[in-house]
Amino acid sequence: MRMSVRHQLFGVSLAGLLLVTGVNAAIACDCMRLDLPSRVRLSDVVLVGETLTFIRFSEARFRVIESFKGEPNAEIRVTISGSDCDYFVPPAEPRIGQRFVIFGTRTGARDTITASRCLG
Image (cartoon, rainbow, N blue to C red; front, side, top):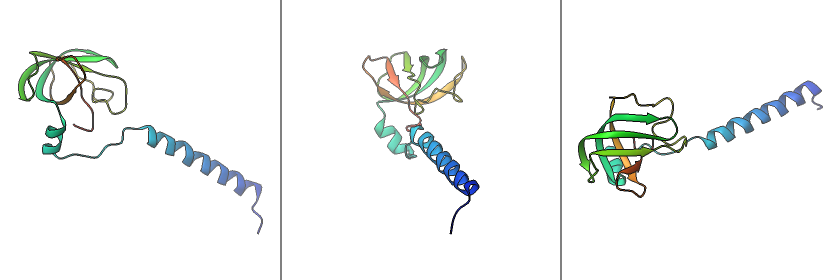
């Protein structure tokens, strides 16, 4: 049975669409949803912080209101690399004064952490 040119073009278009959407899904952040004890265990720092400054795709600084794990300074810097897995990328952009529970991983300096969507 011969396929018409129209059906062949449809098949090629559909395959192209699946390829493109498959690539986008692979690029997006992919992590398992963790329960609270696992998120705490995998974090170096767990705290409530109030937003002091925010520079889109660069960093956010927070005043530590309460610390539950780790010994953060009075202020903490959260680096933002622009990865889909970073916590503070659109649509989650903090406003000055807004408070967050932050599950962070140390990246070197004592006052610098990363926060990913995987940890919450």
